Amino acid sequence: MAAASLPATRTPPLDSRLTDSYGRVIHDLRVSITDRCNYRCVYCRTGEAGPQYPELAIGEYLRLIRLFVDLGITKVRLTGGEPLLRRGLLDLIKELAALRTVEGEPLDLALTTNGHLLESLAEALKASGLDRATVSMDAVDAATFERITRVPGSFATVLRGIRAARTAGLTPLKINCVLLRGFNDDQIEGFARFAREEDVVVRFIEFMPLEEGRLWSPEIVVPLAEIVERISKVLPLVELPRREASETARRYTFTDRVGEIGIIAPVTRAFCGACSRVRLTSDGKIRTCLFSQVEHDLYGRMRAGADDQELRSYIHHTVQGKEARHHIGEPGFLKPSRSMVHIGG
Image (cartoon, rainbow, N blue to C red; front, side, top):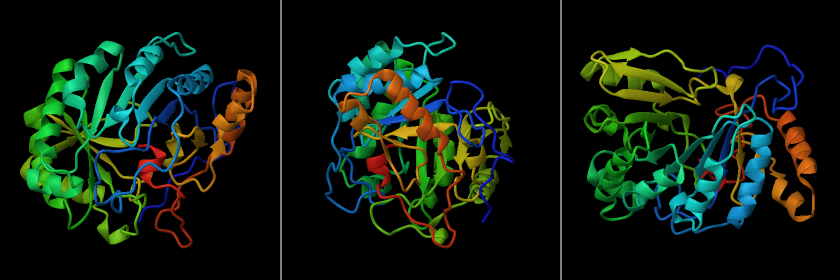
């Protein structure tokens, strides 16, 4: 297993913007607005478990996000759980779309969804100011998909949502597939065809130990090299150049340049050395890494009466302590206290 890459040296912050103690500039914020979900995906949830953490009021999320934007955040992604379940979502998007970065540019505003409610909401999301959407979809075969989600009829519903989002202009539309060996890795070649037929970017994600149960093991991970090899036997791939150093996906297209495949390989090709993101949980806690063992209660300080300057200082201090890397697969590795659905994608 490849070791997670690290910056060569620690460098101090360059200015008031968010820079951690390793010199990484933080410009990407993931915000979970609920840990509720209308799917029960078998690799994510152990069963009927519902929400575990409180949700903030929409105005409270807005205040906290503004603080991060003041400190140089340029990308905001709304996640869950399932964010389309959240009342007030369109109002939040409208307010965020009106914000400007420290450079005076509009925020890059995106959302990750399971797609179940997307058909009816796609036009309204776009009209509210959402730039693009990512749909979590772990199979292109209806029977396999519904075995994963444990929701009958879900495949046709999500497919309609994907097409509605594309028509609405929430593009480039990305489809995220978490691969598990012996579970849905037979979908790889079908997803390659799906990318071309549906004009979407399909991204395969190596399975990480973020599930509620104890399913994860190194043997279940389908590595980047295997994915590329298998697709290339059917539809030869050409690797695309990186657009920025912090980009998480290795990007590929086909020889005729129709369609795009991305592969996010945090286990076998870790990209921690260029990480540019932090997360805000649905109950207002900062997580500086998916695998953090410690959370930082930003909302608690806000409720206690801290003013904006005090909260910005707290964010700065917290980001300075961002972990160098994750330790997946190493002796002594500990899963985070929250599973992925309760952290936010």
